[in-house]
Length: 231
Length: 115
Image (cartoon, rainbow over all chains, first blue to last red):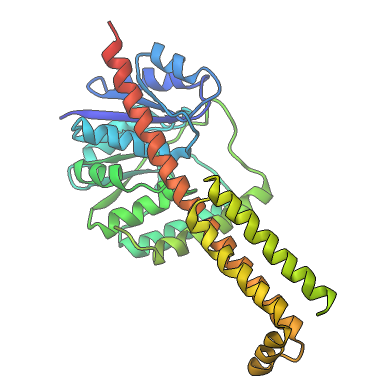
């Protein structure tokens, strides 16, 4: 069983080495691919030094673009399982095995932060956005999803092939549209509860105005994903 | 012929010349020029025969012919804007695919060149 761990990174020079090291420790059989999304810092060199394979984008495309490169790479090299881990260190790779194991019964497994274990606390408009997303997407996919924006996920061969071809680069496209896309393509989606660590570097965007804007974008993404034609 | 319509005529002729020149120098793709090449003669005709505009306003029931002209102008501009947004989205998608392709190819080259 070949496993590829994809780490999309944008200016994560302070955390990427630890993320790569953790992945090597907890998933020794996995190849680690860092997709450097046109970082302006030393992410690329540090990731390479840490022992990861690095693909560098020359233009910043966002997580969606970085992930499609990763999925294309995985598809071209015939990996059986793909794991997506954020480069900021908030995902605990010791729990990666839980996600990969869950691929036995599903094509797309999402590591969910609100599903019981761990403490992960957000409030206000941002929380409403997440609840709205969870409610709408659970209903549409008929799977109980509590944390649809989680970037800690695993895909089996069918989902990897699908995402290598169609993966939205738009805002929230990497999370929301990917779920809808997988569902419309007839893939099985499931969720596994995980604990998140506090970010080792950087800060989450917590400004109230940003949070309200986020809610608006979530609503738009949901409407678009329901009316859009999917291949 | 009133001064206003003279201005219209000169404007139409000037934009036709400008577009013609841009096309000749291959600075403008044909698909973007077509619309302007259609609009300019229409304006020229309206400038030469102002009564056409009056008649058209009468037919559609617009009291002031100038309002009809402005309305149509806004409509054309809206169409142009939409067309450009659409082209822009397509270009972005193409750029994205190219960036991905280049990244994967560069990775491959790096790997091949490694001793």
